[in-house]
Length: 547
Image 1 (cartoon, helix red, strand yellow):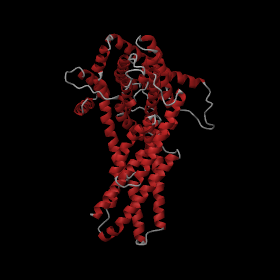
Image 2 (cartoon, helix red, strand yellow):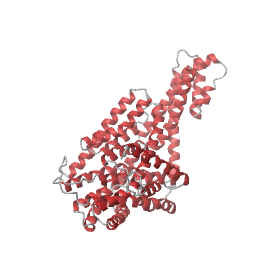
Image 3 (spheres, rainbow, N blue to C red):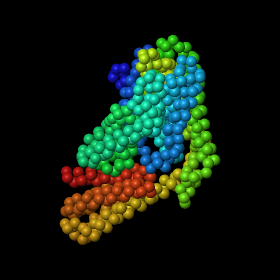
Image 4 (cartoon, one colour):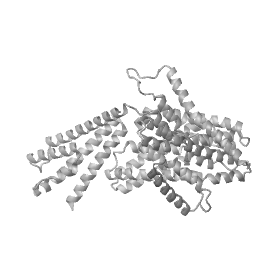
């Protein structure tokens, strides 16, 4: 497809998304539906992007942005639930679909059916998270859904590589599937750690916020392709890099942090809009592929609906099976002296998570990436069927689960009554930590004031900074310096220097509290946002004084 055609798809998708939001509709569903209808309109281009480009260009920024804004502490707290869904359910889905499709579809061998299972195994949390955020899902449920989406793509693509190699006869770098899976994990995480630390080190030594932002923008692509180059998991490399940079969000300059808070949501919006439009626009192309293979279209899509039903059923069955097993087994792993009450989700919350299994871009890209032929030159068995069934599952889950998920959330009333109290306690703790850090800096100033200042001026300066810190009204307090211009000029530089010291101390104290496990990342980021805005205002005042 030409560049002009791709740009046309982008523009049209954004326009449709804009109207859908204005009318209160779910954007993913509208984009898929409109795209599917538009695919039959003469002259409408059908995007044909190579799967490696689709995965390498669209997936890394989406994963990186999600990991950047995702709490690693939250990931650790919910690691069992995330791994059960992100790895356990992916493997179970791939095997179950493979066995079922091998029995159902004559065109598929067992190996090809397992390829289909790996293709349709990973859910895409984009639609579910957008719905959940709008309807106010509890933070723990959102954390599990987002954490699952950061892990399941790597598991599914690794299974896909192994299954496709078994069918085609191609050799992989490590013969043992278990060792290969372990290498994918270790290699991907290692690449992400190394590259993230390099970027972090470089960003700490440059002062140009534009360059710092550019480094952050190219990191997910470099991490993905570097890991893929050594046959490790590019997905895990991107996720790891996002975790590292997100956890050290206080290292960059304030202007860089403010820029990135605007850049990444914009990139997410553009890519997610394009992805759902791209899915819909594939409809006619999938039908044409089935016809070109000489297969009856209604039979193939019948297979697709049968696999779709199985995929929808597997997720709640797996979730509630695990819930029942955990409740039946004694909690041997519970820490002594610590209650685990409240850690488990309610059955209503588990039901909502079990219904949030919509498929997306990874399913379509993997289906398009099924090899054309085996090593011996024979056509890949059932390639057209795999693509048609994968499309049916992706669109079917979006339309069926995506359209009913909001109603399910409202009917079940899955709100966490204690969440608001926990958030309030965390914010109070964060503000107390900030206040104590500020008072320590101000006390140091009183004990050891600059030689250029007289004693009354030191006390006045400290009091102004204290009021500014407590009231979060830095601009008003800093600019209201009275009528004594000579004093303003003399104290202005000291005021801004002391104010920046206070902000730095508050930021350091908050990050240390997060590292100690006392403060959640979500609350930390909220407070850092406030500090960044104050620091930006302080820097603007310094520039005005210099002018």
